[in-house]
Image 1 (cartoon, rainbow, N blue to C red):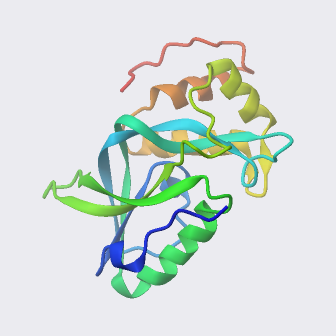
Image 2: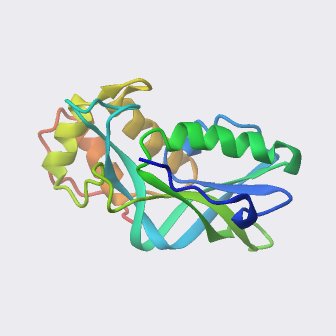
Length: 199
């Protein structure tokens, strides 16, 4: 299955902005000039991707984040120097497109800095037609996959907890992920905890 990537003509030129909403927030893996809290409108962060490689296997899939249709997502925009653009895109494709479950797109994101500017950023959104698209799973199903998932990048549990920590460091909460983190911490007994302040 070929990865859905942008042609060079369709990629932004000059400095490159990359929008991170999951593991890129806490482990970008590429050099950048600055990182700015940012918001993307029209898609939301969701545990909607079965992980067959990084956090699970085809036999015991884990569960990782994708951007799915509707709503909005807060994350981090990274500005990459123009001379690092091509190597950064190559790195991201090798990391994100290992099973072609994401579509490489550009989206407008709003930087939450003094200028409040809008930039065009490289983003990886879920391909809803892919076999690894999980859709909307119940909290119990999410917990089961995260607890069983372990892949090339480690335990699925660590992925979820590291992402929650990165979100909290930005000063906000994600209702779905915080609920799941609480379930992981208490052994999965509390299926309907109430977050202190949901976004």
